[in-house]
Structures are given as structure tokens and as C-alpha cells.
Length: 231
Image (cartoon, rainbow, N blue to C red; front, side):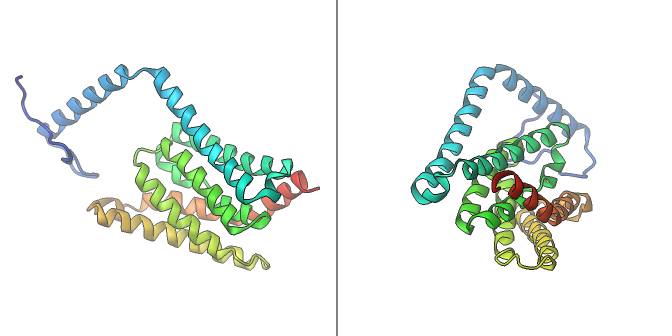
């Protein structure tokens, strides 16, 4: 084969905010063309079947958790409906945001989930439900490990911060802590991966801020869900 250059496995073609040279432009064009050809060769039906299988597996795990470890919840149809409604709503919102602007997937209020579930149930159910949502929504993101890592750290931190929801003022502390967990986990991840350009770009922190502000809407949502499912 005759080629101008080649790209080794794991090699960085172009870093964010770098000015591309003619050689880098050729590498990017070749990479995008090859990626497009591989996507065209992938049967759509197999992708759809794989996605359905993932959904069935994760939702089945959630159902088994309730059946074996939370029998009091499993015996109440309204409570099971509430838990799965939360999962479906977050997944739908994430898919819509990812379709129009993948950079704002982190703006989806994932940390609202552990708060809502924690208020009505217990911390373990809240964490398990949150893990299932993160696993489902990770498939909408380009860097799945980054997404899972950042959301997991922030979600667990949020659960700890809402151990006592007796006062509304604590909700502001929870929102602040959620933002802090987001920022520090994001910085730590990119420091480990030597992508410090992402750390210095302030636009990357806007989705975290939006998601953290959404935590402040917990009480109105709690009131709505309580009227819908517990009366």
C-alpha cells in the first residue's frame, strides 16, 4: 500500500485547541473516512438488538434487586412505577440532549435522581438506581469511562449530602457540593490522561453548573411525585 503517513494505535492525532498542520489534516480526513466506512459496514439491526439487550439486562437487574432485597417496595406497584419512571425520563432526556449537543450531556440533572429516590426510599436503593441510570446513559457519550467516573463520584457525594433533608437550606449545600464533586472529578480525570487543555477551557464547566443548579428544584419535584404516587 502507498500512503503518506500512518497513525499508530493510541496515538493522538490532534489535541484540543491545537492548530492543525497539513499532515494532521490528512490524518484527520483519513481517520474520518475510515470511521465512516466502518459505521456503514456495521449492520443497524445488530446495533438495535445490542441496545435492547443492554436495556433489558440493566432493567432486569434493577427489578431483581427490588424483588430480593427490597420486597416492601417490590410489592407496591406505585413505588416500582415511580422508580422506573425516573429511569425512563432521565434516559429520554439524555438521548435528546446527546442528539442535539453532545457537549451538554453533563447538564442533564443526573444528581437529582439520588436525591429523589433517597427522600422516598433508602440510600442503597438510591445508589443502585443511580448506577443503573448511569450505565444506560453512558452509551450516549463518546468517552463512556469519563462519564461513568464523573457521574459516579458526583452522585455518591450527593447521596451523602442529602442524608438529612430536614431544612431547605441544606439543598443549597448539596448543590454546591455537587458542583465541587463534578469539577474535581473532571480535573482529576484529565490530569491522569494528560489532557490539561480541557481543564483550562472554562466552557467545559458550564454543563456541571447547570446540572448542579437543577438540584435546587428537588423540593418542587418531590412534592409533585408525592402527589402522583403516594396519595
